[in-house]
Length: 185
Image 1 (cartoon, helix red, strand yellow):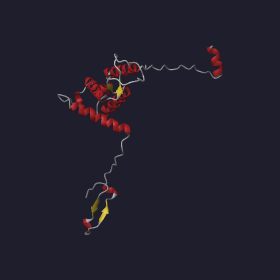
Image 2 (tube, one colour):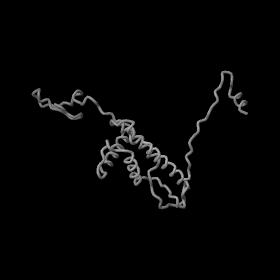
Image 3 (cartoon, one colour):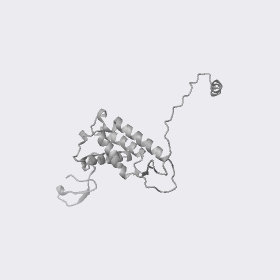
Image 4 (cartoon, one colour):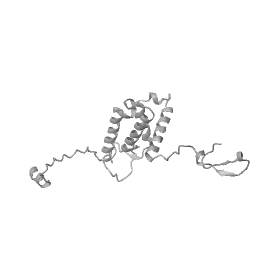
């Protein structure tokens, strides 16, 4: 008799009405381990995107999804954002810590969108999509994310600067840090 783990089963085959705990062999062979936070978010995001596509008029299948659907989804998510993004005409535009509230819209933060796209990109491939046809990896998505990042940085008065790699001179076997400093001056 098949049972769910934690249930009891009857020993009716032995002519008694005693009850015993379900045996280890009665449980499903594969125990599901709890998903990591990342995997849970990825699954939730994938399901949300799938539901978004189903709610389109007409509904869009994942097979027919392209980068335009992804861009529309990202714009749709803005209405649920919690990041104040000051508009060009706002008196607080460019101020990292405005002294008073304003009527500028709340948007999704750039970092949240970037992480979301990363999870959806991975989920697409896990669900059988090819990397070459992944709408989440499209150049248009990268351009959109870059524009959101720059817009939000300007609105807050914080510029993101690309970090330059430091070039360290290669030390020879007989050179020390002191001799390298002398050579540099």
